Every structure is written in C-alpha cells, then in structure tokens.
Length: 211
Image (cartoon, rainbow, N blue to C red; front, side, top):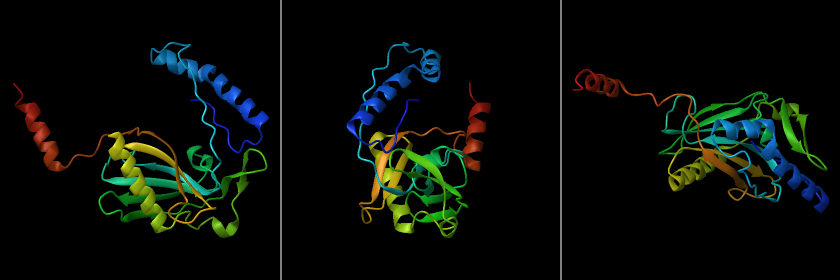
C-alpha cells in the first residue's frame, strides 16, 4: 500500500525518498483502504526502513500454503532473474516450484520463458530484456529451492500461520548465505483447503444429524 524505492544512492536521495514514503500514506488508495477497514484517516505514522540493497541475481516470492487450492502441505515458489519486481508485478512469465513441506523434495517445476526482468542501474531500477541464453534456464538450483522452503517453514512456525514471503539471491555471497529474506506477511488464500472424501462425508453427516 505504501511506496518502496530501490537502489537509492546518496543522502539527499535517501531523504527525498523517505518523504515520498511518508506521503504515500495519503494516496487515494491508502485512504480508501483505511476507510474500508474503519481505521482513522490520519492514523498512519510510518517508520521508514533504509536497508542495504541486495545485489540480486534472482528474486521471488514463496507461499507456505498454495494460494489457489489452499493445500497447506506444500511450499510454492515463483522466481525470475533480477529484482523481485519482476515477479510481484505479475508481468511476464516466471519459474514455479512446488516443495513438499515434510521432506523438502521438489515435487513440481515449471520453467517459464523469462523474457524480461528488473535490474539495478546506476540509480534506481528498470525493466530490461533477459539474455536469450538465460530465458529458459531455471533461476534457482535445487539446494536454493530447498533452503528457501526451509526458511519459509521456519517463519511459518514462529509466526503461527501460513506466510507469503519475498526473498532474493545475492550474487556477492556463496550458498546458503546468498539467500536473503526481504519481508513476510500472512498468506491470502483464494480457496479453502481441499477436503478428502471421508472429511466431506463426515461434514455432510454432521449437517444432516445436527439437532
């Protein structure tokens, strides 16, 4: 809901972007959200986090529950080359991996034709074409997939509910120190978890014989 700025350099630029983040609390979208939730219009006092930029060769998101089916036995990861905006924006194709929560085995992998990605420039970031030789190559190897899955599950256990995380792979470090978790929030699920046939029968019987 609030603004985020990438690859900001110099104290003057940092101060200018902090002001813009504060101002983003009063966009029409932010005000409409507060009105919809019954929150005070002037209720947001934002603290701005200024963090070292991760030199991301690949980034993505991860869910500790399938956001479409509601299956909570798997971790779902989506990734692209470059910065995370190339995934969270929903523009273009990405890689998708499904990991078993108990074994961390990679159960499914779908490698997208990643034609565009977001990269850091001198100041800021921009969309660029992905080199042809990298477009059909997975952004992550299996150890990285499994380690991201493990970290996601650790966050879920500590926070007590399914999580929607953002992460990045830093090209300046070696595995596993190259994996950075950027943020997390409770995961939103479109559908309820699919029940087994026996669960459906029990639920139906309970409804039929409820006094």
